[in-house]
Image 1 (cartoon, rainbow, N blue to C red):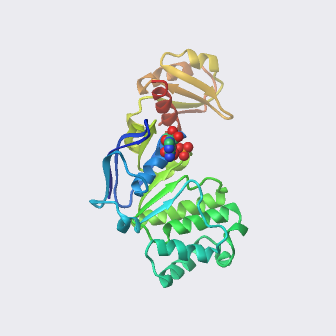
Image 2 (image 1 turned 60 degrees about the horizontal axis):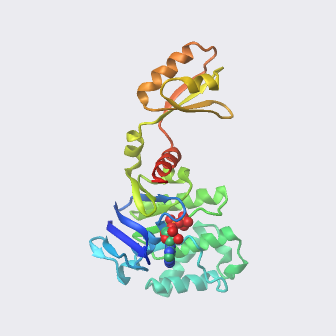
Image 3 (image 1 turned 180 degrees about the vertical axis):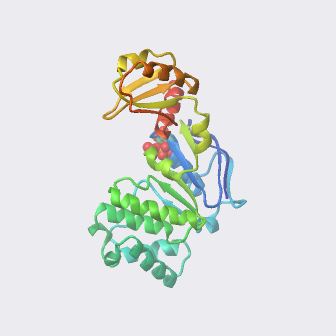
Length: 299
Ligand code: ATP
């Protein structure tokens, strides 16, 4: 289990991470979320022991993270860092050796992974001759060639087409199934919702919301009602308890202060003809994120 306890990191006078704590258990996928500059990459670098926190500590299975342990961690960095003049095989031999693997093991795992990602034919090609998406597959393979117990994925899907996003998703879920703990950062909340059972949202390095996604959604008071029918947007906006009402391509979406205001919307709909849909929904993570980050900014 990864345990991050009260870590703080300053760059000069600037506090990039502020008293952050969280835990990621075996086989759990954890989302580290925040707008640009919130402190995600800094946190990843501290976990990888590339930089030291000014205070607090980080342990993996009860031990401080040192080079022995980083052999069992995989890190897909946001800025891609392949040695592009090498061939795919040469690159993997290099990365694998950094993770203390012998050549035979690296080549055996590489063949399996190249097949999984459908790029066997590129094994002896120089990386700079591959497309961006295929380079990203190579980078992903480099991050998991050591069969990590902990995998850090910083924006793993950026630049991928929808088919390859599905492929990456299935590989990530496979790894989770095998017990890998995964920390995941993305600006795409739909991807986070798909994967992460637990998450933290950072604003200026500080946690503003954390916990299990299910609990976060249940605790979030504002609910959404989806309506299809001949309603008037201006009427919806006037209903007591309605915070926001918008028209989408196929329906109306109404945000209410809390579930108790649902009946007011329902009463209004009784006065309207032709209502074909009325559904009370949980807010999306995207809505919670925007609202939580929005209310914290400017403070
Ligand atoms: P993004 O989503 O844009 O990748 P992030 O959440 O990963 O952002 P970090 O890269 O951790 O954010 O940066 C956090 C803050 O620390 C930013 O304000 C950044 O400018 C600052 N920062 C990061 N690295 C350094 C550094 N080496 N020296 C000084 N400031 C830094």
